[in-house]
Amino acid sequence: MSSIQLFPVPDLPLIQPGDRLAALIVDGLAHIDEQVQATDIIVIAQKVVSKAEGRIIRLADVEPDEEARRIAAIVDKDPQVVKVILDDSRAVIRTRRGLLVTEQQGGWICANAGVDRSNVPPGANGDDYVTLLPVDADASAEAIRQAFIELIGVAPAIIITDSHGRAWRIGTVGISIGCAGLPPLWDQRGLHDLYGYELMSSEECIVDELAAAASLVMGQSNEGQPVVIVRGYSIPTDAKSAPARTLQRPAAMDAFR
Image (cartoon, rainbow, N blue to C red):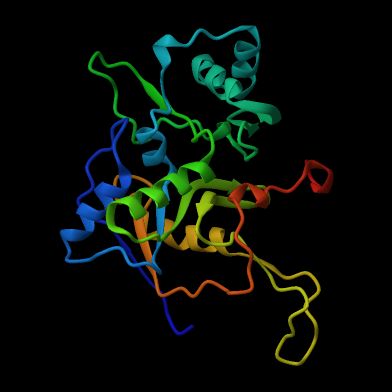
């Protein structure tokens, strides 16, 4: 592999519930005389998938209970937001001032269960809204892939990304919370290095590496570029396709939880 190309899909509108993302991506690429190719990998920010799927909560409709208020006092967050987080979580993993880490219903361990206010416009009456992660981001990715097949007869690979922190490092990185049409992991155990030594523990997370690269193009604030095309990456032929959720480390193997 000599090089890969990453470029954003331009001129995407602000996404509304019910929007067909595949059609909007095709239209956006047409503005730069591009088309979706079968070997493309389309990386899509979780926020626009959640908006299209209607995973939006109006905070005025949320009534915090005693547990939400208790945790909100610890983490110094809005009790209504904390209630939304808890309702979409399996378990609370860590709490301290300014930090609430949970195991989200989809199994992802992340800050605030992925609940987010950023780039969510207020309602007509000035009401605040937040978005939740997709119910099943792997299913969302597969549905978008199938939509491309129906629309243009091409089945690109799809990665849905979110920005997550790391336990031992400062800063967020784009990771995959859903994928379709490509393997999330390349198990290289049994292969050999330059000097003939057998690899004993090398498992490359393909989808996270591509998600992180695409996140650099997307940006994190007001760039308005939530979809990035990855072109030229050769998917390893000996890697097995699987949902992104298979990347979640079982609790029994988690040395730090």
